[in-house]
Amino acid sequence: MIRILVADDHFIVRAGLQKIIADIADMEFVDEAVNGYQAVEKASQKDVDVVLLDISMPGPDWLDVLKTIKQKNPRLPVLILSIHPEKQYAVRAIKSGASGYLTKDKAHDELITAIRKAAAGGRYISTGLAEQLADLVEFKKDVLPHEVLSDREFTVMVMLAKGESVSAIARHLFVSPKTISTYRARILSKMMLQGNADLIHYAIKHGLVESG
Image (cartoon, rainbow, N blue to C red; front, top):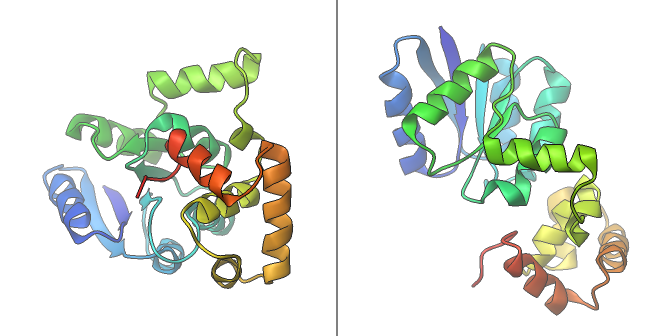
């Protein structure tokens, strides 16, 4: 029996996933989490085989949640669920330890296949993601500016692009505003942008955040 923890802040999504899992003979919906803190806590306390993790929940950034879960239990597979296309976040998710990346519009059969593969110790890699990973290994593509950012820089960049203030980001990430300002300056320099307006425009253009 594959025991599954679903971490998503939307009730409809959790209910839908629970129904899908309930219809599969070798799977069991063990518990649910509605924010990043709960996801980390329940992943470490519950007897689960796979975590389905949404990337847009309240609490810690999803990359921090993923890394914390993997640090506490390196063998626990985590599948990322997202509304964003693979090209935005999938490679970063896999590099951070995820066992797969699925958009929420994927077919029922694809989700079940991904869960089974992750539970067996493998990684679920779609054709599109496989091509992205191959390109990175073989240096066949031009690297986009945001792809040169570290994971923490990427997190701060996305939060700035969503319109969050330096002080709000500092509180969220438990660091000082000065630290976030340093990250901001480094991000703008690496991405060759002038300010937050450019950052917001870039993030919307590349699908990293949704337009208002």
